[in-house]
Length: 182
Image (cartoon, rainbow, N blue to C red; front, side, top):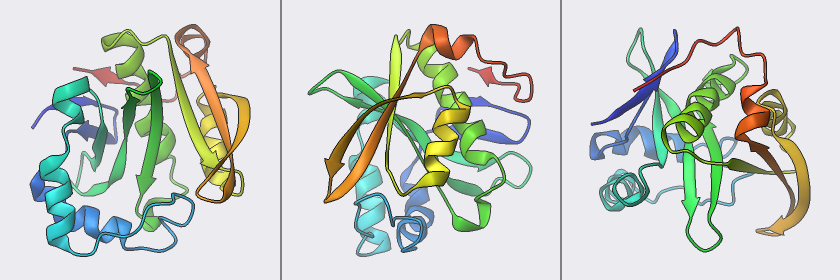
C-alpha cells in the first residue's frame, strides 16, 4: 500500500480491500452520504469488490485515499483527487465518519491531497463540488482557497463548483498545517 504523505495528525494512503468494512460503514450512514448522491453499499462484500476494482491509483496516479489517524491507525474516512478523463478536471473530495466532523480533519487531509496534486502531479488547478446546502463542505473549500466558479445541478440538487489554481493555493498561509509528501 502506497502512503501519499502525512501531517502531524493524519496520513493519506491508498485504500485496499482490507478497507471494505470501514468503507461500508462510512457509506452506510445516511448523514454522511446525505449530500453525495451516492447510495450506500449493499454489503461489506460489495464495498470490498468496489475497492478491488478501483483502478484510479494505477491509471491516474491519484484517487480517493484513506485518511488515517497516525496515532491510533484508525481510518477516519477518505480524501483525495478524482481525475475525470471526460473533461480533464481533477476533483477534490472528502468524506469522514460523523464522529470526526468539526475537528479540522477534512481541511488537513485536503491540504495533503492538494499538495500532492500540485507538487507531485504538476496539476494547474483543482475543482471541488458540493451541494449548496452542504455549508460545512463549502466552508472547507473556502479555507483551502477554492473560489466559487459556478452553480450546476446534479442528482436533482443545486450544487456549487469551486476552483483553486496552484499559484493561488501556494500563496495561502498554511502555517498551521505542516505537510510532508512522499
